[in-house]
Image (cartoon, rainbow, N blue to C red; front, top):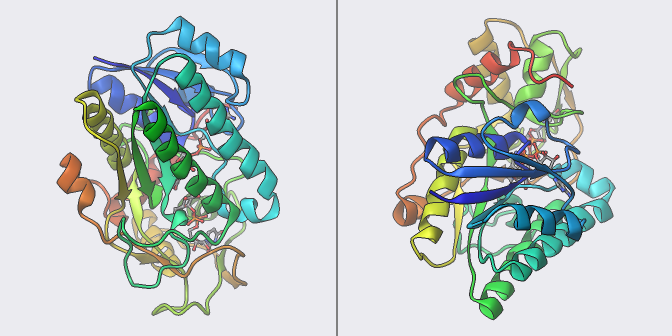
Amino acid sequence: MATVLVTGGAGYVGSHACKALKAAGHVPVVFDNFSTGWRGAVRYGPLAEGDLLDPAALDRVFAAHAIDAVMHFAALSYVGESVRVPLAYWRNNLAGTLSLLEAMTRHGVGRIVFSSTCATYGEPAGTVLTETDAQAPINPYGQSKLAVERMLADTAAAHGGSHVIFRYFNAAGADPYREIGEQHVPETHLIPLVLDAVAGKRARITVFGTDYPTPDGTCIRDYIHVTDLADAHVRGLEHLLAGGGSLALNLGSGSGHSVRAVIETAAAVTGLPVPAEDGPRRPGDPARLVSGSGLAEARLGWRPRRSDLRTMIEDAWAWHRTGGFEA
Ligand SMILES: NC(=O)c1ccc[n+]([C@@H]2O[C@H](COP(=O)([O-])OP(=O)(O)OC[C@H]3O[C@@H](n4cnc5c(N)ncnc54)[C@H](O)[C@@H]3O)[C@@H](O)[C@H]2O)c1
Ligand SMILES: O=c1ccn([C@@H]2O[C@H](COP(=O)(O)OP(=O)(O)O[C@H]3O[C@H](CO)[C@@H](O)[C@H](O)[C@H]3O)[C@@H](O)[C@H]2O)c(=O)[nH]1
């Protein structure tokens, strides 16, 4: 049993990881500033409210709990927003992680599981992405995450810690027991926006770009169920606790779905029409991001189990109909 500091544990992916940690017998200690997280999502372990950029708040949580390892989810994570306000991304994602790594060093904690992203690869040259592909991000969000990957490598080399870097593709779905799910304000992610449009909470969904070099002209993404991501995090943690070395692994389903395919599947799952209109491209969006790697299975025995598009949208829809967290 490990005590795990979970930064961003009140957020979407972090809260699902906390549930999985508790189910595996570990204690998740959530550290969150609630900038995009929800108090109702903190239900699987203790809470320490604080900001990564506040070293004293970090010192307090490391002093209060015997932390064995860190899972670091806290970040700003919107591709489009990062193009508009890049310095906010550099401050929160890069300086915030620097502050966290300094605190870990002060308190002698060397194990960390980090949420990176397939956005670190940029615009891929081939059809699928593997861990050995060049990383050349095309937006500030991806740049900030790649910089953290480099910072982790330098820190491990100097101080002897170990890390698991997970480059996720697009997180989707919700806890199948409807305890927690995806809720962002404002929402920018495709699947919850589509479900908002179905439910009449917004007038329509806009398809960002219909002239991409893809079969139907819309962007293709690899959607991965959030509970599959959570399972990978527990495996990554246990790899580090067992003395395993540092890893960088893609977490995707290996299947790509276009924006139009997501809209069509949402209509099929809900039995309702999806009001949609075509619009211009969103700056910073690559045409196609799909994982082509089995490395996470080879190294951690991880395989996605709920990541077919229909199941992810069914779980997201079931969560959507609960009304979500109270503000
Ligand atoms: N959602 C995805 O599709 C996706 C894909 C790839 C990578 N990621 C990465 O996974 C992580 C989690 O993403 P998410 O979708 O759950 O995001 P989220 O916004 O739901 O969660 C982020 C959490 O971090 C907290 N936070 C942010 N800045 C903080 C700070 N300075 N101090 C303390 N807490 C802070 C927020 O309040 C929130 O609870 C992020 O690092 C993101 O970049 C997400
Ligand atoms: O109203 C909308 C919103 C999105 N999209 C498109 O839908 C796709 C998915 O967009 P979105 O759900 O915003 O996710 P991404 O921009 O792909 O980014 C997510 O997935 C990345 C990994 O691919 C993570 O790193 C990010 O944190 C996470 O926000 C993209 O092609 C968008 O252009 C639309 O067409 N209309």
